[in-house]
Image (cartoon, rainbow, N blue to C red; front, side):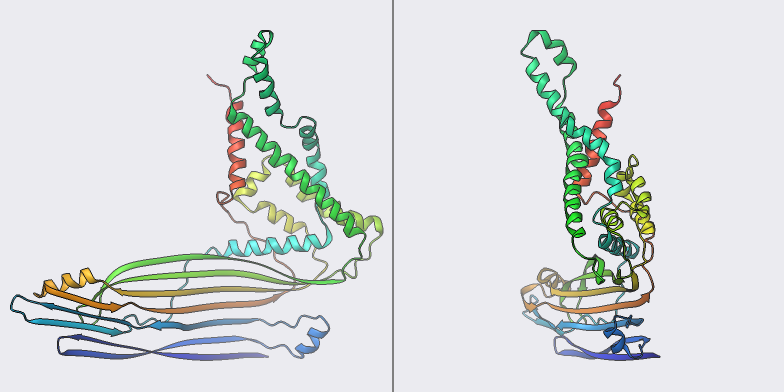
Length: 415
C-alpha cells in the first residue's frame, strides 16, 4: 500500500529601509515545502521479529529554514551647509527559499560504499586471500633473503673506498642517496609491510577457525563526501544608503549507505573446507588473486577501481538475505550580509554628504537546508561501476609512485 505525506513551514521575512524621513517596509512570506512518498509494509513488526525484510521504499524531498538573524545598520552624513542625511536598514535583506545542490560525484560515493560492503561481506567468510599471499611470496622471500640490498651495497661501497684494492669496485658500485632511499622504500612498502599484515591475518584466521560460525549478521557500510562552493559580492540594502558585503557558503553532503542482512547458518562445511574458506583459498579467490599478482595492477588501482570491481564480481552472495540502499543528498546554504563602513561613506559622499560621517550596525544571516533521500530495498549488492579516482591525496601512494619512477629513471641508460 502506497502513501504520500507533505508538510510546510512558513517563514516571514521583514525589512525596513529609510532615507531621511522616508521609510519603506516589506513583509514577505516564504513557504518551505516537504514531502515523503513510499509504500508501507504489512505486518512489519512480525517480520522484524522473525528477521525478515521489513523495510520499504520511500522518497523524501524536504526544505526548511534553519535560522535567520536580522541585519541592523544606521549611517549619517553632512554636507558643507550642515544639512544632515541619515539612512538605516533593519530586518532581512536576503529572502531565501529553496536552493540547488552542488555538483557531486555521486557515483564515486556509491562505489566507495559498495567496496566497503563487499569487504565486510568477504571478511565474514575469509580473513585474507591466501592465494594472493602465495602469489606474492616468491618476491617477498627474495627480499627477506637480501633485506634492503641497496643499503647493504651502498655501505659496502663506502667502506671499500678506504681500501685501494677495491677502489674500482667502489666506483662501479656507487649509489646515490635517492637510489638507496627509493629501493629501500619499495622493499618495505611492497614486501615487508604486506608480509606483516598477512601474518597477522593468518593468525586471526586460525583463531577464527577455533570459533563457531556466526549464524547471522547485519552490518551497515556507507560513504559520504562534501562539496563546498561560495561567493562574495557588494550590495546596496533596499531603500537605504547602507552598502554591505554579502557572502554565501553552500555545503552539499552526498552519502550512500547499504544495510545488509546475511545468514550463513545453511553453510555447513567440513573442517578442512571451513579452514580453506577462512584462509581465502577457494575458487572464488582465484581471479582476484591473479589480478593482484599482475605487474602494475597496484598502480592501476591507484587511479581506477578496477580491482574493486573484479573482487565484487567474484564474491558469492549466497548468504545475503536482503539489502537496503539509502542515498542522501543534503545542502546547507548560509548567506551573511555585513555593513561596509567605507563603501557606505563613499555612497554618502556621492550623494553630496561627505562630512562628519558616522555608522553603526551588526550583520545578519539566513540559513536554509534542502534534503533529498531515496531508500530502496534490493535483493543483492550491485557491482560497483567503473570510476576514476586520484591517488594524490594519500601520502603513501604518492611515495610509492615517486620511488618506482625514480627506479625506472635509474635503470634507463644515460647518453
